[in-house]
Image 1 (tube, rainbow over the protein chains, first blue to last red):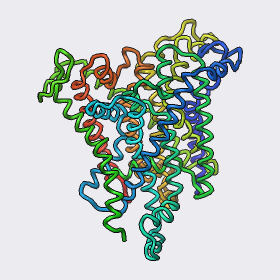
Image 2 (image 1 turned 90 degrees about the vertical axis):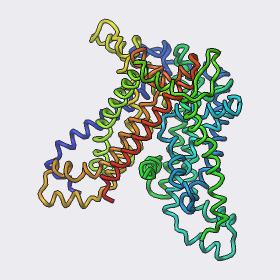
Image 3 (image 1 turned 120 degrees about the horizontal axis):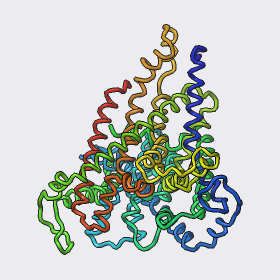
Image 4 (image 1 turned 180 degrees about the vertical axis):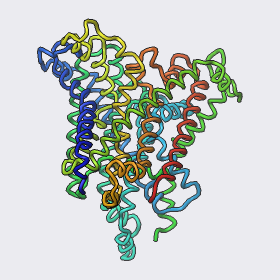
Length: 281
Length: 282
């Protein structure tokens, strides 16, 4: 498209604006990483005495690693719950008619757009009612439930693009539904399912608003960090955050490659945003 | 082509799970909001409107709610001012670097919310990065103490967090605009500004509404940024709820406030959905 030579000044303004927004988005991340190497603490300009001490301290910090293990446990279990119920939910929305379907769809999506405090508190009341003691289990149930929305939207978007002829052929040729599901439906939905799993995993690892109300004795990583922030801040937090950032970055790059190879496009999470917006209708 | 049994198998388990873990808890919240607390701090299951009366009578509640709405409104406005032109630039002017730049907007989303809020705290603090930088270059001689523990810090941090959220649906909407519409507008003699305001902008309104709704709703219910960076003047409505469920131990009153928030949020979603439909041409 000829963006018209008359609009060159305009595109220059837009470029400057974009650069400023990127600076704003990345400034805290840059500061965070830089000060994880700062010998004299988290404030103070210019940073000096670059050191790896905070990382050394971090590796010797048992409480942090316990919370990392807890978070991994919760994220994996939440992933299992969300996929176990989210994938059938997408199939149901795509293929079945039942009373209350519209309400069901809205209900599934609600935790994605509701502030975490509402989901967290309402679950707290439920667990209190049935006298379930707060623990990693209650956090897992919370994450698993809230993130069904992610599995459902990603898989539902995949189903919309799916050609049903293959499933029909499989059924005609004598395979039962179970075989057809595992041999045709799931392989065809591989990408949305992997995408959903990665998103659920990352979102659960990072989740704090729901966990905040469902926490028992054992901390997840975000809650452990939260507890330390309340007590005062050290660059050890920067160090652990930097490590998480690098891990997330590696995950995104891997996912990007996978998706580009398969589809030629790489809208990580875009499907989610788009379908949240459009499935509200 | 799918049998009845298939439909039942894919429908019943998720439906049952969602009823138990989403619908029942929301209903429970509704019930709680009509109960009360005895002097022994146990919940009394007698139905009354006391909690709602208290909400209307004590100014602290609706004042805090108004402040939260005002904070969320500013976050929404700033996120749109940052996110919309960025999405427009990427969609129409970025050329081959579009994919890379798109990923660069997404990446901060994957950095923990808490970590980003914390990073702003280390930047804005009285011996934080910004204040020591200002003194280092002799722009100020004393630390500026309005930066942290103020509504300003909360608005800044939440804007940082929700800008990518508003960017995404706007970008998606802009990407869906058929480029030949834009060309036709140029060919028929419209200036770039006219093309933008008469063709592109109206077609992007559904995305803009979706982005604005995201930013507003999610920042309205936030309680972590205010706790971390807000100070006493940056308290938001969710902080009151947190304290009612914690130290103050008045779950019914907390439930009543939460329910008001829920109703506010759901009606907002409803209206933005209606508006989106009105503005979508497809």
